[in-house]
Amino acid sequence: MATARVAEPGGSLQDVQEWGLDREDLLGIYRNLIVTRGIEDRGHILFKQGKIPGSFYTGRGNEGSSVAVATAMGPDDVGTPLHRNMGVHVARGVDPFRIFANYMGRIDGPARGRDGNVHMADDRLGLIAMVSHLPAMLPVAVGCALAFRIREERRVAVTWFGEGSAARGDTHEGMNLAGVRQLPVVFICDNNQWAYSTPTHLEYATQHLADRAAGYGFEGVVIDGTDTLAVYREAKRAIEKARDGGGPTLIECITLRMEGHAVHDDASYVPKELFELWAEKDPIDGFRTWLRTNVGFTDDEEAAIASTVKRLLNDALARAEESPHPDPATLLHGVYAEPDELETPHHR
Image 1 (tube, rainbow, N blue to C red):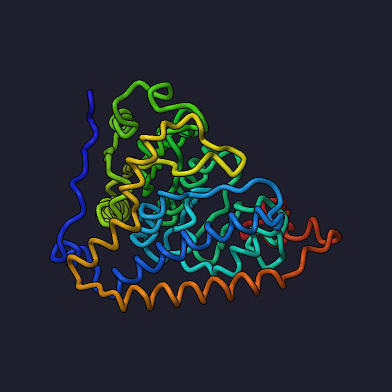
Image 2 (tube, rainbow, N blue to C red; image 1 turned 180 degrees about the vertical axis):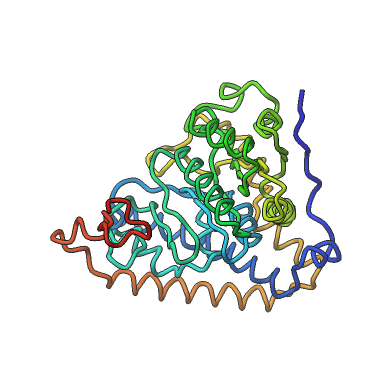
């Protein structure tokens, strides 16, 4: 039996204005959606050209939820976006040039060419880099939230995970501690319906993953992850509730992974009809339609944004290709903190 609240669809212009978004904010969200998809589309080309080492992962279909949640975050909040959350980096202000550089293992990428091509984050923007053991990032975010509580800071930690990660102990441990201590953290589940090739009915027995939130002592919300404005509304509500001492929220964004697990996977196990169904729910198309209906978004404005984004990404890619590879002699630089660099030098 479902216990999580199922969120209503995104609202009218008046509703959106009450949430604190004006027309420029909305156009900014649209631009970030376009930038996000454009970065990953160019990433596919780079991979086929042999310029991206390792495999390559994207979040096609998740752009709306990623951009929306990041837009709802405060400037001092922190987040742990994963490989399907490129929109978080874009919305928080990471320069596309640095993202392309990271793809290609260059020193101007956030990982400085020392980690996986999508293992990136700019800590100056409140982002913490992922590791391949994806659910391991939940306890990291919970630890941040605990630190905020101890320091009496009005800050919130936001952490992302897929429904496959929900089967791991890290997820349970993180949510359990967050619920017990009522910490200022928001859990975002990108439920894209396939844990690699395992469908959801073989992953968990509840109707919704968000139903589990009640067992941890906080609210669970289920939402259409392609509905950008609905995700923004629920994320904003959850983040501000956490900031005001109301404890955690688990938001389950239902989407579909519109490509394989990575470029090496053709996703042949996903029914063609399912891809066709979710292609009609493309978050960018849906948001563009909403803008045209509600704020008079014109062909000229759309063309201007598309032209600006194309030029931005082309320039960023050209600049990234000029970025050098890291010097092997610097491999261990910046990996380990020196004792004297620690705020609290416990060795003394």
